[in-house]
Amino acid sequence: MAANAPPMRKNPQRADKVMIEVKDVYKSFNGRPVIQGVSLDVREHEVVAIIGTSGCGKSTLLKLIANLIEPDEGEIILRDENFSLVFQYSALFDSLNIFENVAFSLLEEIDEPQGKRKKYKQSEMAKIVSEKLEMVGLEGIERKYPNELSGGMKKRVSFARAIVGNPKIILYDEPTAGLDPIASTMTEDYILKLRNELNAASIVVTHQFSTIERTADRVCLLHEGKICWEGTPEELMQSDDPYARQFAHASLEGPMAPN
Amino acid sequence: MWFADVTRFSVEHTGLSLLNTRSCVIFLMQGKLNWRQFFQSAAFCGIDALGLALVMTTFTGMVIALQMAQEMVKQGAGNFVGALMSLSMLRELAPIMTGFSIIAMVGSAYAAELASMKISNQVDALQVLHVNPIRYLLLPRVLALMVMLPLMTVITSFSGIMGGLFISSTFTNLSAHVYLDSVLHQTEMRDVFSCLLKSLVFGYLIGIISTTIGLNTSGGAKQAGIATTQAVVWSFIMMAVFDYLITYFIYGSSGQ
Image 1: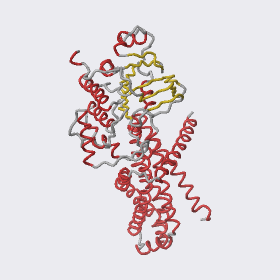
Image 2: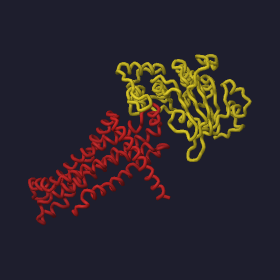
Image 3: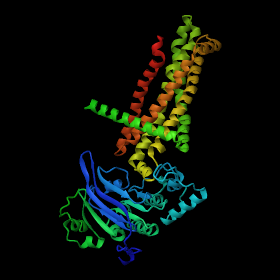
Image 4: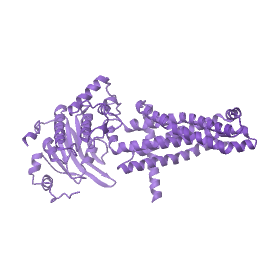
């Protein structure tokens, strides 16, 4: 385990500015309630893991925070407009090559909210793109297309695309799901590296224990659209709370019915 | 049940199409057209689908000539063959046949492409990157069809008329001179106008219907397939309806 220790230890004592504020948010689809009163604050330099069984509303919460869907009630405030979302299945644009994918927000006209984008020279863009690809351990693949890459590589490209604008808020949707253990560890390291380099506030939706333990400063357990437990990863493993216990011990016995 | 589903679908998608049209117009007035996407779509219509449209209209012209020219010459109406061909081509067949080709090749491709982009979260990814999907995906595609379809229809009308000429002069003793003379003298400006207006409106309908249906898909591969079928079917239906309306608007009141 020692070899696998996080490269940079977390420091939850830092009193940083709140970057993401979720205030008592409700959302239902076709009358079926999915999020039922979630409140959550995430600070600068903090990684919050959102965990829970499948179908508990984790991805919906992430979409709400990313402003892809509107809440029925409540409010979500992002203190910085410069945010990014890393999609579960990479969501790379398959008609564009890797360079165009990563440089997308530099190449394209932006509608909102920053208004006009800065104009970049081709050489500047090439430099930024190769820098970001290097950061996720990929080099010299700029001319390839997404369908020529493996699943793990696509995921890393989508990391690079997400961080090209140096976001202050990064949301990850199951970043390590479906990756082999080594790629998983690499991804967790990127999450911490990005947190440190960009001083970003991060939310990681996951069910993988290694990801929770190695990246999160704080864990929120979501069940039936509510946060039913909150604490550090260490507390999760030792908690007496019935929800946290059931999740930590991957037990069938407990208040959460398996879906 | 079936009727309720169809009604709900058509009302919902009419509304969405109109809203998307409004957004497209606003973006266009702000000068925010993505030229790269526009030229890609335009090239796809003009180069890939033009071949099919030419085959369709040329053969339709040949079929009509084969059925009518011999009979008309026999009845002494040989100097109306050219007019028959040009009027039927310009007023009806060229816009419709070119529209069919565009639905088959371009509309279906738009719907399938946008549906799979939606399903694989690429549309969400656009939004996260602060790029409006309507502006980036819909506007260039719809506009490309509205520009290309009239241009293509001009070419296909010509090829249809020439197909008629070829058959008329092969199977009857009608001279090319008489045929073309009839084409030039009995074709009115409003026939050309009708041809261009129809193809412009068909371009808009095919574009907006295919992209709107594609962009409102959710689910998986099966739903993407259904979206493509729906885009084709609804494009056919709306094209037929607007064909009638435009014909009525231009020719209906003049008693011809």
